[in-house]
Amino acid sequence: MKRIIILSAFFLFCASFVSQAQSQRRIIQLSGVVLSEDQNGDIYQLPGTHIYVPKAGRGAITNGVGFFSMAVLAGDSVVISAVGFERQYYIVPEHTSEYLTVVIELVEDVTYLKEVQVMAFPTEEVFKEAILALNIPTDNGNIDRKNLNQELLALMLKTTPMDGPANQRYYLDQWAASQNNRYAPVMNPFLNVFNWAKFFKSLKQDKK
Picture 1 (cartoon, rainbow, N blue to C red):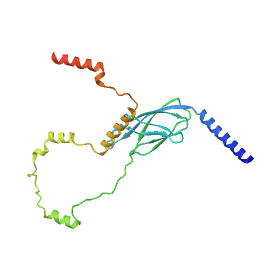
Picture 2: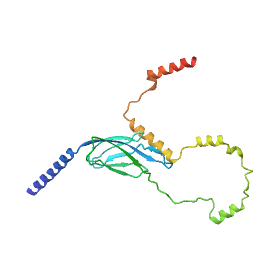
Picture 3: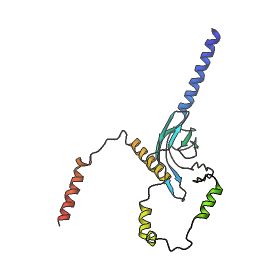
Picture 4: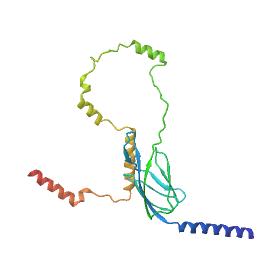
């Protein structure tokens, strides 16, 4: 019984020492922006990135422009992670000001798969025989020049749906915006008197 009491007192002393050491650590307001680079070399903000301290159990999420701000302690190890990007770690310096601003750049975690060829023929020999049996014209006389019109090609490029990375970026922007606006009041533009004033002013200008 005496040994149990001694062990309990020792554990309580260690816990109080650790809590006292943590309370002596300075509180720092860590702010920053998370960026990334696409395949074309353009830098863009990365919304929806998780910034958290695993030992403390606290964190934040970047908004639509990749900005975050959270309270940390000096010496904390901060983890920065996002879907499709390599995880990074940042240690808060011991000797720094109360307000710390950082710029973090994440690298895409790309996995290259082996090339897969899908053919409508059972074997490669049957495919070659079918190609050799085709009567393919060797000149450009059968190509419709209307399909090579520059305006038509520009319109096709403008109306082409988004690819995979563009869809991912749009989804992350929408998700980050929904998280930021979850507790924000919803404003009705029809109840804004300034909007009505601009509307009547534009009507008068149109009449003139």
